Length: 115
Image 1 (cartoon, one colour):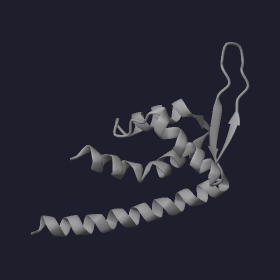
Image 2: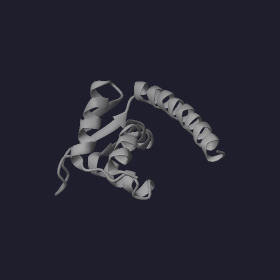
Image 3: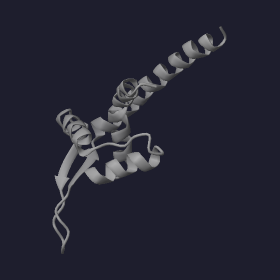
């Protein structure tokens, strides 16, 4: 598959995946990048320059909130992101939409395989 198509397909689901990872607990950027890579079997390997615009957009939309941790010992302060109530509601709606799209794609692709 062309890298162009792969990038486009992945780009469409990143908001949903980031919200899902924040559902359990607040995380900072590197944690999100690491979990996306690990939990997807390296299907989603993001760079900072890809993740942070997503987080900023989600924050602007009120779907996530950010807060800075205090520096303890040698630790540096980190910006943690957490899903908001609005973000949880939106995640449910996005996932329902995704499942509908997935079902429609499966129907079309299965029909094509029978040709």
